[in-house]
Image (cartoon, rainbow, N blue to C red; front, side, top):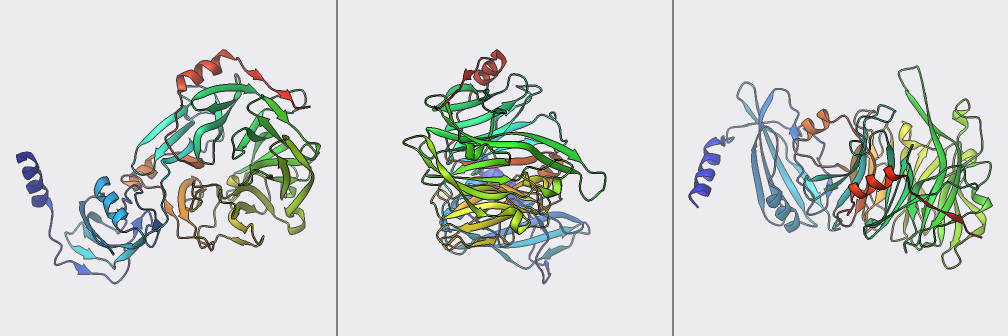
Length: 485
């Protein structure tokens, strides 16, 4: 009790009065730009830095429209996690009004115009995000890692890193509709394989057969968890010599296959193994359709500008484990001179989100890549202008309740992709996105030279034993798959 009283006294003694602050009739410059964003109640605190020239100290007060108040003073706006949690929960469906004062290096305080942070009535109860962190050095190295992050705090946990598996490349970590009880990922290179994990039990498959050109990647689970769709492809990179573009990523072939994880069988169709490049499969919310992208065969990388992907759909019969006998083209890439890739249906079956770019089947490398939304009831489409920037937006995924989505954006600097979260209502209205919160965000993002790749929500913390995975990978033992007759 005495310690608490002393601590409170010391805090009060160190807090300066800002009663005589000069009023400035404009919004403050803050990083990240959280002005006017919409957040879920219970998200990690939106700590921010004040970017006004000469700032040495900040004073921030936040008042809830329903109840509650927070105050902090220091080098940047840093909020107590428990107090922030309580404030946002108490004001779900309302807003937080933020007052910012900044002290400059001459000792003068300035008070800026207040701004609001909206607290959505839609909850985001998922535990967190998984993502791959990778330095944009275009090679294996730099300690590539798959991590998970508790989005209600700042805690981050490694799942698989290059430190544990030197020289390996791994990605395509995919949970089943945010449920990591069913998880798959692909390890490339020597000792590579396809992991299928169910309730913590790991099975490593060799999905390369005499009937397939390569192992599986770019995975997507059937909602009931028996089947998992994969692309069969090889990814390559070529480099430009001008300053406006530095990289073109392409696939010189691509097919679609489905793995029956219970039987260890591959389900194939000649409609998904053509001369064209089929890529990025995704099951519909009811599991009766597979969406995917396909582009006509061309001589890449020389004809890289000709890569125009159409967005297509084919039926899938879960009971029989078979594909339909025809392909429907939803968006025709060559006809519209665009490329449509990375279809991701919302889990409630209402929306289909995808990337639109001028060309290419790897949107993260395209400055023009934007997120678009299709209403699956009317098939009408629109660009999501609320989130798109002049740089690349890609690798989007839905929350378990389909009211939030996460995506990667290079909008900040054109080089590093960051994870952003936005909400969507039942009419398709999208809110201003917010950057994944960090403590002292300017220092964090300035000092970390990693891109956030393939972010996805998880309902609960992922149960993954890296020691078992390392032993399995190093053993080279793989369960060979068969082709379904």
